[in-house]
Every structure is written in structure tokens, then in C-alpha cells.
Length: 184
Image (cartoon, rainbow, N blue to C red; front, side, top):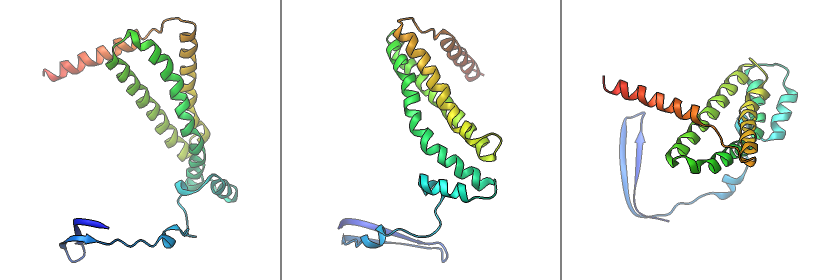
């Protein structure tokens, strides 16, 4: 039941718009119809792992659809693993952040997420076109950030200080350049 509302209707074909005010409105949903599965064609993103594997096994051509399906299959595994890869990176940075300002830690985290997303996007583009195997495109960001995270975790466990001065200097340089352009 909905109370005290407005329903807006737009008819683009006849270029008409109207509204209906109501005090009470009963919404009837057909649950059986909503729960029945369509037997039609599924999008690659809607397919499960078994359906994707079956599609890939039955595919005879190595065209764009094949590589898109292969990317979707690898994406179903690599994206959840990204949580662990970025988590391995976050722990040592979080431990070492007591020496830095909180805003710097936030900025550093955002930079790492941006770089991860750029690597993942590049991997998806090259993997979908078949420029290199899709497995590489989907797993390289996880391997790079997971490896970096494990390296930093080992350094932190051995209580050796992380040197983030080059990153700090780069951010200061970019900030000074941006400030220079604002004054023009």
C-alpha cells in the first residue's frame, strides 16, 4: 500500500505528460510471474560459471563474443580475490600510517585504488580484443597489488620502516604544479 503520492506518466510518442495524485494506492505484484525464470537468451554477465563454461566449450569461433564470455568467467574469480590483494596492501600501510597524517593515508589509498582500476580496465580492454590472453588481463592487477602487499607486510613484520618519501615528493610536486596553474 502506498499513501499520499503522485504518479507521473510520460507519453513520448504523443508528447504528453500527466500526473495522478492519490491518497492510497494498492500495488499488486504477481510473485509467481516474477519468480519464474525466462528461458530466453541470457547476457554474458547474467550467466553462471557452468553456463559460461558450456558456452565457451560449444563456441567454434574465437570472436568478440568468445573473448567477452572468457573475460566474464575470469572476472567471476578475480574480482573477489581483489579484496584479499588490496587487503594485503592495506594492512602494512595502516600500521605504518601512525607516522603520517590521516589525510595522506586516505590519499594514498585512493591512489592505489585508482591504479588498480586502471590496470584492471586496461586488462579488460586488451583481453576482450584478444591482444593477449584474458586470464592475464584479469589477474595481473591482483598479482601486482597482492605481491606489493605481501612485500610490504613482510617489511612491516620485520619492523623495518616503509619508505614512502618518493610518493610524498611526487604528490608535493603535483600539488605545486597545480597551484602554479591556478595562479595563471
